[in-house]
Length: 543
Image (cartoon, rainbow, N blue to C red; front, side):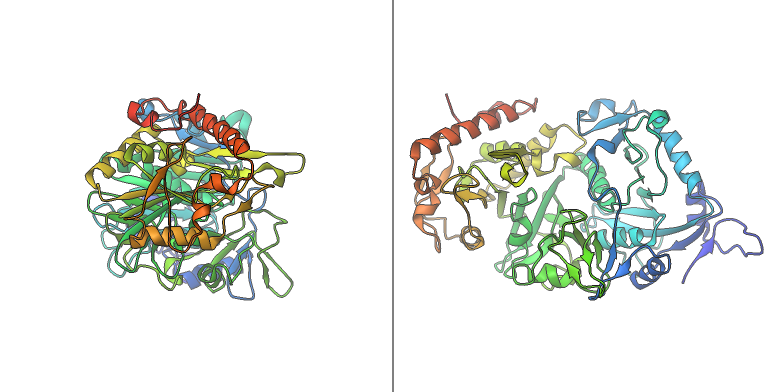
């Protein structure tokens, strides 16, 4: 194992790399045993020795994250520096914390873990060399350092010469905040310092906080470089065309983007500049609940091998994972290097997208399987970020619950939403050949509990038809409530399914449900000041 001490230890010898030593001392770390840039097997060995988790029968390292099994939005804060105050889209998501309170928490957290082991990895974010930046991760736990090393881009030989990190991620889950003193909402805290580019995660062992906090920092800085940061997956078709899939949880983004017909550029975070698309990461973070080999063979194979990290997945006494067991959480996760996917891109780079798909799982049963969007409609639905679920899944609830997440990722967007929407519009105007489609992987024939969910075969058929150009010459008709263009025919899909109205027995009930949903869209769009008038007017038309 490679390690060294940053300060003199009794009867010990100082073995130190001066640059890292000074860097860590700047943050206040002293007298720590520091393991620097360990390999994946070395980090796994430390995690096992420290009893941070255990192996599954397939070789993955399995951990339980305790009280926090998912992100904790109410515990996320942006440090309120005067020089950035007017740039942030403050609200329920972007909550401020004073500079004084953050510095107090920071110093207490660092002091808490002094005299302990630290695991440090020097990494990169963003595949495009013109935008690539260094990210240094400092972790109290070996498995967490393995996680962030897996999710970010790992340096190749020689790339760390002269390495200077721009972003520092510090994760100290053992330190707990005191809400009465620290101006926090609980013992956990996720703090984004956008001035000094520091991420501090305390009180929570859920590793996804690190991943999404790095994404949030990039979402703050990249628009100034005319890069649209995107919460989407990206693939390359057999014809060499780049395709993007936006969609909230449960919309089928992973299923559609891991189709073996496509080369996977990345599964979650990308940037779009004037010359192409690029992945931010070097790994994937897949939901594992109800994961089955027959439905998602590539993901299943990737999470079931040495080097993968499974969060909160139940394993039996023999280490066999039970992906259907949600006794700890439904948000079971698997992290693995992107090269574990057999058809993954080795560069993380793509072209200007020829197709963009906005995925929704509409439990109202209103939207068609596919619709083509104009530029303004694309900006409108990008702002909306709609999906929905059947409320009957929760005891005592009835009906359908709508979810709107601006840009399909508003928990990670520090700037006002209009900044990202306008940037999308700029990219579409510069690239008029890019087609944007709305795809409903949800219900037809009625809402959740009455109708049936679209089959994966139908969703794949409409996506494949669009990518192959099979919809270019078909006849289209306009749907009356949302004004969407719907194809009259599509290879591999029954024409009756293409207009969802045809699948409802009670057409008047369809109209009522559609207009009710349209009113929800109209109410939601009013939350976003600064949108161009033509975008706001691209929404549904109801009395």
